[in-house]
Amino acid sequence: MRSRNPVFSRRGFSRDNGYAGFDAAPQAGGPAVATQGNPYAQQAGNPYAQNPYATDPYAQQGAGAPPAPVTTAGRMTMDDVVARTATTLGILVVTAALSWALLPVDDANINRSYGIGIGAALVAMVLAFVQSFKRRPAPALILSYAALEGVFLGVLSSIVDNRIASGAAMQAVIGTMAVFTAVLVAYKAGWIRVTRRFYGFVMAAALGFVLLMAVNLLFAVFGGGDGLGFRSGALGVVFGVIGVILGALFLALDFKQVEDGVAYGAPREEAWLAAFGLTMTLVWIYLEFLRLIAILNSND
Image 1 (tube, rainbow, N blue to C red):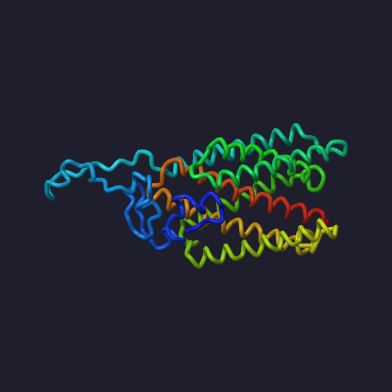
Image 2 (cartoon, one colour):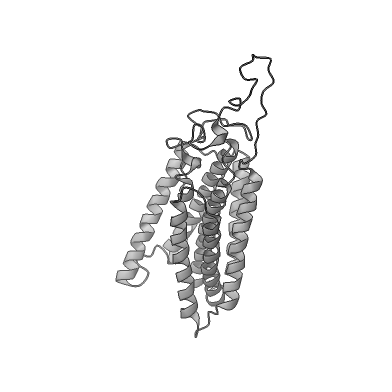
């Protein structure tokens, strides 16, 4: 399965001719099995896809020979994903808090602070693309992305909170946490089942959403005002809700990717990519909540 997150689209999480693990039944912690649904089976350089008895001196001595122990060292675990994600989000929160405190958004400084925030966002986007096309995860790039994204979120949140809607940032944080928790519970309970049809629907909806937002931005840049109005007024509220829902669906895809990676014995370094993808999805949801709150309060 290919995630909409670029970090999952070319790594071991998706080396399955398109849809890994949708209908497979992997066992967490077990050796990778060379099957069509296993994205790590027969992968070059993956020691976990090898026959565990290949170096067993008893392997050719009959059925009664003791098997060689199968080691799980070096494989990604859920604890690895949680730890890396907590580190990445922790750095993002710290830099967001610092930028909020150190970059004032009063009338005299708002342009400078906003410019710094936009610059940080652009550099973070470049780092995200660089990491996405690297063959191996680079923790320094991922953490730098988180730090710069935090600067942007801190400035933007401060502007919305201080100049449009008091308390908007905390409301957006609570909304993001609520969506994450709800999707996680629904996914673990089996209420959300990630299938090929589910994946196709999410990707088609995301493509349409992004294209509409791009067209709206072009009209706003060259025509002035709010463009086609997709990000303001009643239409802005509708598209804000759609954006939050899409973020929730992306979370389900990310959970599936992490689950498959753990179950199929992905290398431990892949936990950084999982953290990267989850962080980008949570940032998406937070921004949509923040935009939605700003629109609702500006219409009062």
